[in-house]
Image (cartoon, rainbow, N blue to C red; front, side, top):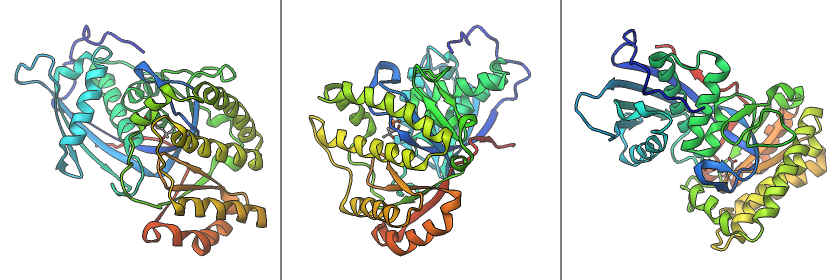
Length: 364
Ligand code: PMV
């Protein structure tokens, strides 16, 4: 994905300032990425599906720098119309890492306006949707200004590559449906550098999977995922975990292809609990689950056993529980959520989401 963009001229046809706007979804991992090497290379492959209603909407305007600023990144970022120095710093750090791949980043002035459909304090991480939306805007600029990536496949691969360097899981959000990131011998075309859509292999029952996100707490994570990943470097179970993830990936893809919900539930729940066990057993131990998270988990398992309704859970790096179920179980699961789960959510708040079709460009 490396291109020497400096050598290409700023196209005379490109309007100044140039504006592009993309909406990109968050995603939920079923096989978890936890542990990485330098340059955001994952220690194991991961699998997720992109969400539908939880997304970021980002507009980027660029113009060539008016003042000589050398290699400095000139950037203003507005979150919900308000300038946000914390996110500015985060994006500047990401842009600096991209400079070799995209030297034009220091040649323009950037104005970024962004907002999320999910509330900032909903406990949903915005880095996957936020970084992927911005990566799609950057790729669009490379397309318009430098005439790169005119094949659709190359366009999304480049966006995924750039997004990965901002936040690993973000590289999976540039596609709708189900996506794999990370090299796996059994998955042709899989790569550590960008994600790959695997939606065409999915059984129809799994194509519209619902994700009801039970918000147990809206507080920001007490431990960042960056810190969590780095604790894996000294984790006593690390090498075994990476082997387990590769095996879980192969089994889960088979279950998803064959429409086997029982097998799906076993692996997905195992992955979620493994992620949290790794956090609890790392050398600097931390616990993100709360009593209400465990209560919801028990209730889901009891309900599935009692009724045979296809429903299971996964968990991201936080206390909130994602309740997964296929379209055919919707009516029953909605009553179950109403009758048995919402009392354990923060002010009964939950998000009704499902698999989405992926990012879209906003026509300006
Ligand atoms: O993309 P990061 O660095 O925020 O890490 C994400 C890690 C998990 O969300 C816990 C798992 C995953 O694969 O999305």
